Amino acid sequence: MRRLFYKGMLADTIEITGSDAHHLMHVMRAKAGQEVTVVDDEGSVARMEMTAFREDAVTLVLKERLAANTESPLELVLAQCLLKADKMDYVVQKAVELGVTEIVPVKSHNCVVRYDAKKAAARQARWQKIAEEAAKQCGRTALTEVTPITDLSILLKENSGTEDTEIVFCYENEDETTVKSCLQAAKGKRLILLIGPEGGFTLDEAAKVQEAGGKAVTLGPRILRAETAAVAAVTVAQYENGDLG
Image (cartoon, rainbow, N blue to C red; front, side, top):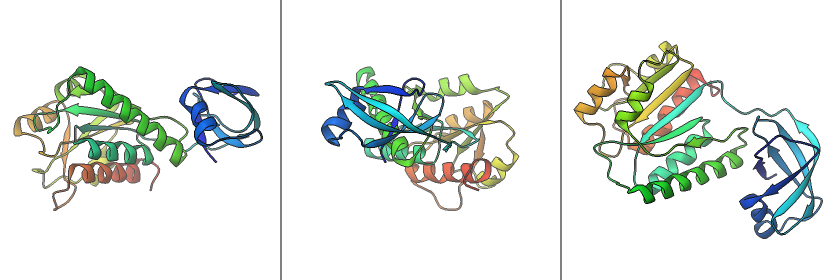
């Protein structure tokens, strides 16, 4: 059953507009009597029936409220240094499926791609759309926010010294502290996983992350591609501190 995210609170009757309405009417060719699952801004879920169609809206009536919270207890942020377009798309999709709360695209020294302001806004919009489609597909009860692209220095400045936030970064030059041991010792309720670009972090960047309180970890004896590292790190984090364990 198709899942929709509704901007507002569920009621006995609601209207779906915008791209979701267009998709229902012109892509799915939906008809009166068909049902969808709807999630509102508070994470409430319901089975609803389509009853009427207008040019730009679909009317839904509530059939049954559902107890279907699928969100992890871990507030997990993926700070991913920019990757080539198809790889970044992949990371966004898989991170949402694995329950990430927020995705922060990060500019760092070795990022291969460079965007001007217009292209950066377009990329953010694309990644947000990918995140929303992934949330619908995997049955999330909350949408993952993809923030605007930010510099690594700004990310560190905004999150260093925050009591309830832990920064963990996967670093190819770290060979002692495992991600598992670091996560087991983490006390913050909010976890930021920082993953480098295709070229990895510079020595200066790694030092600055650690100065900001970030903890360097290894993902094992093999050097992983950036997109593999992101999926692996998120999976381990959800297993140790979230809802996969």
